[in-house]
Image (cartoon, rainbow, N blue to C red; front, side, top):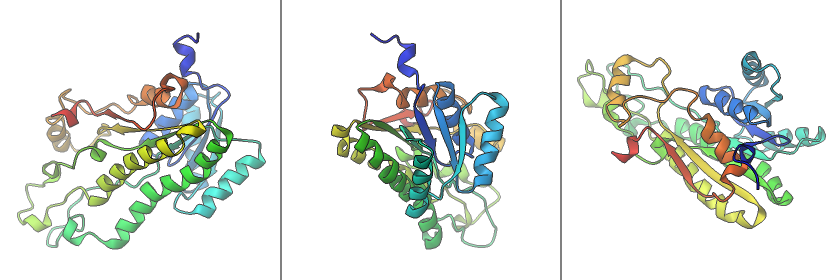
Length: 279
């Protein structure tokens, strides 16, 4: 019988993380590398991917990391990346669909705020859906399709607590803005995309269940990143644990979901939000 620690061991496995240059993307890479995996660090441009590798190497010079550019909105780009890796003898065992656009909530006085549903621009909807949802589908189609052919693999979709609950728009209210139509809100796209990722997780988990491919999601809560203190205060009042997450606190969960430690788990969404969705 394997020891508990060995169930988390990802030695001799190769993971690919999309959107790896972002705040949590680098943490996912670090978590997988820490567990022994070789990690393909991808972002929309090679410069961003190489910068992420350089930053991660500062903390772990021995990490086996490969920088690669992938435009997840383009099937041709995803296929080209897969072919490039195959040409180097690299097969992807673990796919982490992390790429997303997280729109920032700001306010411009005097106009209906474009984040509001009534004024939300269709091109922005299409762009964010293309990156956060269609991109996950395309990467799963290419890399997950290969996993199914090989009879083994893991896909982890990075969702959000806002894929389980609706945004509490009171968090984003700005007291100096007096007209309701000028109040900024969390845009419709982010929550819809994250709900969609959980749906994609369930679909693929059953679709490839008999091909040895497990598919799960994780829904992180808000991560502290020096946000405005007033916003942090409002948000933490909604969290039973009374704080936002530290940036490193999802690492062990990623290791669990991507390793044999979760070998009998598929189609599930692991919620880690400090209890926010319970209230």
